[in-house]
Length: 461
Image 1 (cartoon, rainbow, N blue to C red):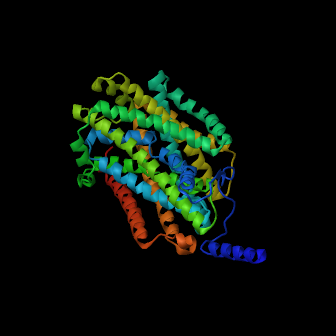
Image 2 (cartoon, rainbow, N blue to C red):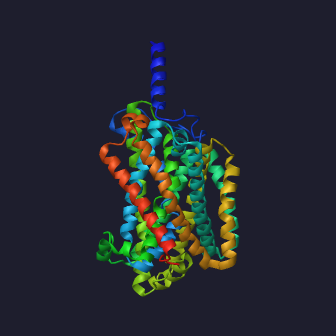
Image 3 (tube, one colour):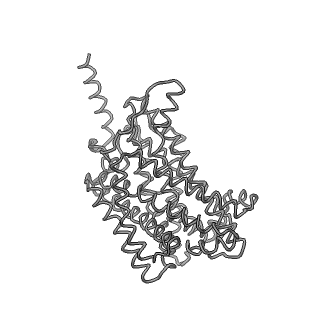
C-alpha cells in the first residue's frame, strides 16, 4: 500500500510540473519556509486558531501600501486636488486586494513564488529582463523608505537630512535581529508599527474635521483625472505607491511560511484564511492612505495651501493650521514608523526576487547592504544638491517608477494563475480571468498614457 501511495504521489508531482519549462527547485526563504505551525481540527475554536495562525503575512504586505512614498503622493493629491483623487486611493486599494489574492494563490497552489514561476516558465533572457525591472522597483521603494526615515529623524530630532539618510544603513541590524528570532516576531513588530500609524492618523482626522459630503463625492471616479495632466501624474504616482510590484513576489513566498497540509483541502484552507488575512490588513492600509489624503485636503486645500507636496511643509503647517500642537509630532512619529516598517519587507522581497529569478542566494547582510546603498547614493546626491525640496520630487518620482514596473509583475501573475496546467483545480474561474486581465490592461494603459504625456511634453515638470 505504501508503495502504491509513493508512485501516486510521484505521478501527481510530475503532472503538476508539466505546465512549467523547468522543475521546481528549493523554496524561497528556506529558513522560514513552512515554519509556522497550523492547528488541526474542524470545530469553531480550531477554525479560529487556524485563522490566527494564518494571520500575519497580510500585514507585512500592507506595509508596502503605506510607506513614505504613499505619503508624498497622497499629500500632493489632497493639497492640490481636494478629495478628487480619493477615488484613486480606494480603487488602487481594491485592485491591490485582488492582485494579492492571486499572488497568495499562486504560492500556495504551486509551491512557487512569482519570481520562481517566472524563471520556470519564461526563457532565461526574459527572466533576466524581469529580474532587472523588479530590482529597479525595489530600489525605488527603498529610496522612498530612506528619504522618509531621514525626513522623520530631521523633524523629530533636528538631524540633518544627509546624516539621516546615512543612518538608515544601520537598520540592517534590526532586520537581521528580527529574522533570527523567528517570522512571528517580525509580523508582531510590523503590526505594532501599523498600529502607531493608524492611531496617529485617526487622531489627525478628528483634528482636521473634514467635510463628509465632499469625501463621499471624492470617493466616486471623476473623468477630470484623465483630462488633467497634473492630476493624472499624481494619480499614477498613487497607483504606483499603492500597488507595489515587489509585494506580489513577497506575498507568493511568505504565504508558504505556514505549515498547512499539502492536499487539495489543506491548500483551499490556506488560500481562504490567507485571503482573509490580507484583505483585512489591506483595509487598514486603505484607511491610512485615505486618511493622509483627507487630512491634506481638509487642512491644506481648504486654507489655500494648494502646493504642499513636501512632507516637511506638511509637518510645519499641520499644528499651526489645526491649532493643535501635538498634530505635527504625531505626523512625524507615524512617518518614522512607516519608514522602518517598509525596511523589513523590502529586505525580504529583495531576497525572494534574487533567489527566485537567479537561483542566487546572498547572505541577508550583503543583500541588504547592496539594496540600501543603491537607495542611499542617489538620496545623498539629491539632498546635497537640492536640499529638502529635491527629496520631495524624488519621492514622487520613485512612486511613478514603481507604477511603470507594475505591469511586468502583474501580467505574468495573471498569466500563471489563469493557466490550468500550472494551477490545476485552483486555476482562476472565468469571471476572475476577465477581472484580472482587465486590471492588467488598465494598469498598462495608464502607464502608456503617462509615458506619452512625458514624451509629448504635456506632463507636469
